[in-house]
Length: 512
Image 1 (cartoon, one colour):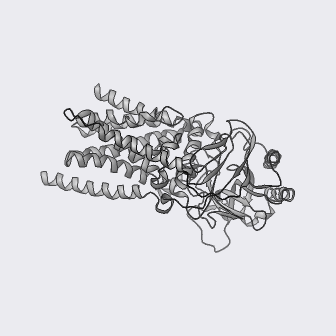
Image 2 (cartoon, one colour):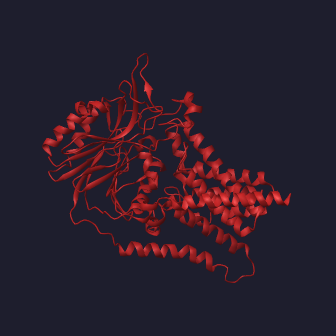
Image 3 (cartoon, one colour):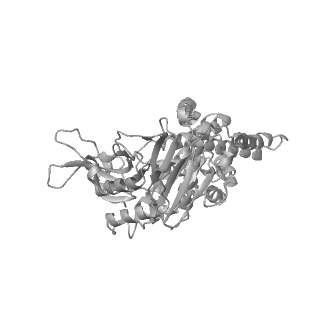
């Protein structure tokens, strides 16, 4: 019964520390019950089983909203993510039983960080519950993410939990609380210092940007109202805020419902309509989401995601795209590269191709979408724009190149009025800190907004409202340490975990 209570307690503490669910300080104590359980357990199955229960509770409470979009996908996410977390905890237990306890707790840190890092880089990637994300609504205490990325936050959480656990279980040492106190407080003080000095060199000139939130119901109107009417409604909404000084108009993911073939971009109804709008506002550049398609010419090399039109020798790729229409020059297209497993791509396609179509499409075309890109950023005047489409905005190291503005376009209406869309917006605040970039965010249904390079929300919209907002922003061209070196904490952790597992295996064999 004590072990069951410990597992449930850890699960609840983890869950109720999460943004839009509870309060973040709980995260610094969340692993204590599990660590106590692990310390008293001899049976490995017991550690794995109770660990799985704790992490299932964590996953269920924090990401319950996935059920709104896909019942099958949510169950898979709950079960698989809990399994991976429990496995990382089990490997730590196995290492700790084979080598010195101090190295064993190092094993807990590097095994967990390895799990989070590797979870960013495989076909079933789902990093929503990376521990460092817990500080998304309090970026003021993690300003050092510009050096470490979100995995630095995970490291902090794990280290504080271990030090508190060791202090709690040590009886004689009167100074036992000094280490956990310092490790808890010093990073906060460093963060406050970085936030206070605000030494970024921002350009003196400002750019007027209009962000549109059309508020089209994805379950009722999105695919039932004609694409031409949706486009007219979008333009009418945008014109309520557009001025002759507006340099950029941003619309959300898949805002354009027209079937857009990339070899005929200039001829599409949507592009022509936007070109007419630009005649009224000559300085206007437009970035908007769309589902686009590329037809392969005869003899052209096909991709692994190529589709065939039934009963015809015609092959094409489908994409979840950001379309950029500059005030002069050719229309450009960026393709989403981080696709939602199941909804936008079939994981492990050689094994699971037959399951294509089971899960609900979350913003584009069902099945495996293409990801190949010729364009990775949009350049116009002084702006170098990094587009991030929906799911991409939870990947901290995705932004590459010398960009000075991040534009997130998304359609969070799939999750309805739940914690999901709130968490998604809060995570963008961490991206701003990591890259020290202004972020402009257009969501079809709440929350659109503007975020400063320090993670401060300058302006935001409400859920379920059709609205446009205007922002005058300055740009920053400095590159952060994290932007240069990416998730080095994760890479180092994988190496260290591998070495500890080899050491554990060898010692285990020698004991036999």
